[in-house]
Image (cartoon, rainbow, N blue to C red; front, side):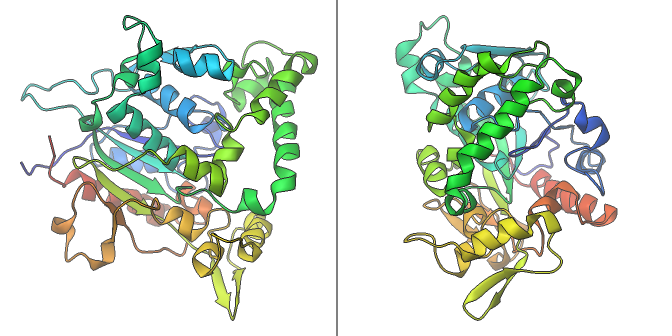
Length: 390
C-alpha cells in the first residue's frame, strides 16, 4: 500500500569517526562538521534521527552487534561462538535503545521499521547488520543454548528495515590499504597504542576508541602498555574482527561475500569523485580536501590484476569509485535511467549520479549549510514517499 512514512533514521559513521556518545560530537558533530547538520535537516521532515558511536576501529560484525543493541536496547552480545573464537568477552555495554519498539507491530498491525544510512565503512556495517537481521548466524544457533541466544542471531527480521543507504561506502574494499600495505600494521599499532595509553583519561571519553572488549582501551580504567601489548598484537594477527583487513579489497570482498539484497528493502548508493583523467593518468584535482591529496595519489597510481583502469583509479580522496558504486555481484540500476521515483524498486541498488565531492563532503566539510542540509532532506523525502513493503 502506498503511504508516506517517517521512520527513524540511523546515521552510521565510518573508520576513525564518532557518534553522539563520544564527547567530541558535542563540539564537532560528525554529520555536519563544518557546515549544515544532517540531524536537524532530517528532523524537520518529521523523522527521528540518531547517530550512534559504534567505534572508530571496530570491525563490521562487532559494529553490527553494537548497533543492534543501541537501536533495539539491551546488552551487546557479540555471540558465544564468535567471542570464544576471537578471544574477547561475549558481552559489551548495555543501552536503553533509540527505538525500543523496533520490529514490533503498530496499532494498524504494521511493522515498525527504520532507515539505515552508512557513510564509508558505515556501508559495510549496514550490510552486515541486514545480513544478521535476515539470516541470523547459524554458528551461534548451533553453539549456543537457545535460552541464551541473542535475537539478532535468529534471523527472519529483514522486514524491520525500510531502506538502506550508503554514502561513499567501502563496499568492495579500497585500494589504499593495498597500495600502502607495508605501512598498515605499523600505523594500526601506533593508533592502538594511543588508545591504550589514553585509557582512563579525559581523552578516552572525548574520543572513545571503543575496543574495550579487546582489553587494551577503556573509557574509565587505565590499562598499561605492558598489559595491552599482547592484546594489540593478537587483534592485528586476525583477519576477522580486524578493520584494517576489512578495509582492503581482499578483506572487504571476503567479509561481505555472503550478503545479499532483500525484496522488501530499498537500496541507494551515493558516491563522489575528486580526480580527473589526464591521458593514461588519474590525478586529484586542486579542490580536493588537502589532507586527502597524498592518499588519493596512492590510489590513482595503484593497480593490480583485478583492480585496474579508470574505475579503480578514480576516487574521492579515500574511496575508489569502483568501491563505492555498488556491491560487486549484486543487482543495480543507475538512478538516472529511471523516468521518475515511481520506478524505484526494492531489492536492487539504485546508484545515484556521481557527485563532485570529497569523501568528507558527506560529513559537511567543504559544503554549504543549505546544500548539505538539502542533500539529506531530498534523500529522506524520497525514501519517506516510497511504498512500504510488508
